Length: 459
Image 1 (cartoon, rainbow, N blue to C red):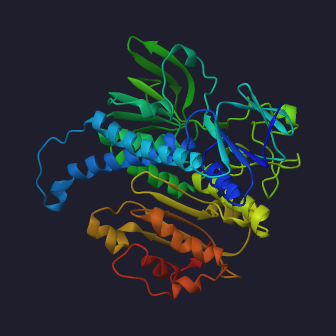
Image 2: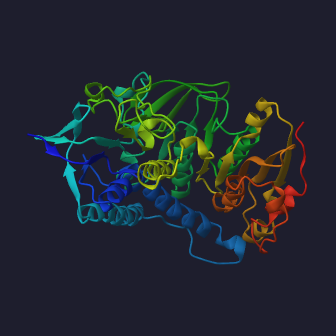
Image 3: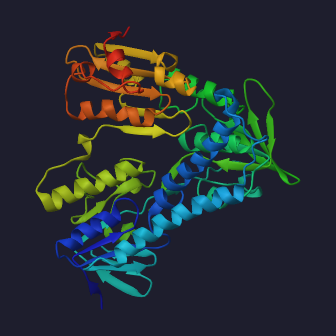
């Protein structure tokens, strides 16, 4: 006999808990199912732990530069990786337990711990229990992709999850993948004291970014002593005693890189292969992402997919926005859609990259008349005062409508500064609104109006 609920949420990532609680607060009888750790990727091996580690790495980096600011401290700077990990673990535990306690103490909400599999479009099994509902919300997230590279099964390797267990400093960390996850770990461990090599198959880092952004990121990382191997075809791995040899073919440089540890950061796959989706008639694409419409509905009535598993975003903020969209449509009579949101994200190297809207390459491809403004961080007073002048800011504007099309801000505090532009974009206001705003001095953001006052045709 099945236990009946009004709604069942599968997964406790960034969308699931908030939605489950919101539904329960309306008086609905709700169940939420978690097979492993409460909080999903962000809490356990994504945003919270990695940004905590990045903060420790930045502290070590700033301490080493103390003399540049006229401050004398002991030398050499030592990093205690066990204490670094302990600090990270404490923050993760606090967040994870917070989510778990919140759910378990919510009225009308029952928490199940186990693996959920669909039996049919209206029932799921969790262990020996059968649960039934008319509405299902799938929020199962994703995991690191393991590519079928030759020799990968013969060596030990790390990914973004297993890296969270590291309480030691690798002598030489080889990072496979020159994109967002890989670069954050690369800089982090270089600042902790490891030798680091990044192996990227493509011609540039962070391939979705403009070439000038990619090149600037490369310059920043190389300036800290990170080895970058571009146009590298990673053909295999080989164990060399207690080390690992990564065989690469590059236009220049040695064809084999030997390191103590390897981190795979080559993308992610959704956790959808073992949910019994076929028993419910839920369709997935060729990569395993659950297919949804603009309001996150699958083609099975009453079943929704939110977060990383739907392929409509790969960030904590897109997952939470999925929750907001579903809740607004179901409970508030507010017709919100995925297509309403503007692409926005950050790369948390130091200095960070803040991104919103279209890239310059996308604007050029669109063929529209556009204006561009660009300013190096060396011309930003706040950056000079802090002694952190790497990077630049770039904004693109539609020449006819005066609406902002996109921005790439690479520089100190630019993960925060980008929101100044993003909010104007959401307001659908012309760039002149922010150009004529009086910003506070001295800040990084105050140079946005200045840059917008110096727009030139995009040629």
